[in-house]
Image (cartoon, rainbow, N blue to C red; front, side, top):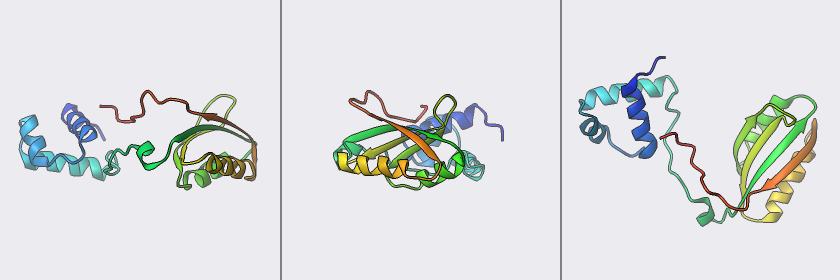
Length: 146
């Protein structure tokens, strides 16, 4: 599907505020509400818009530890990544190039949770090695491109 400048503008507005109504967006963009709604439906149908969510301050919920974990596997990397992606604390699983096969970003409330998680990763079949980095400070954490 080709998206044009209008679709891009709709997406940028939704990334900033997913709760904005089609009517408000139409007024802001100088278009009809029906046009905006039909374009949003098209973007949803094409899975460009996968869903709508709230941005949460994880630290205020007690998730003070962010870990970036590198995984080296000897085979079945895709299966390992699928298993990891189903774990609640995991925010991102990336299949990457380089000496590492997979990078995981996960959040934890306590060091003991992180320890248990890393040990469970290490005991997975075909996981050769893990390297864990604990984030000290977060300057920016926002995956919106707006």
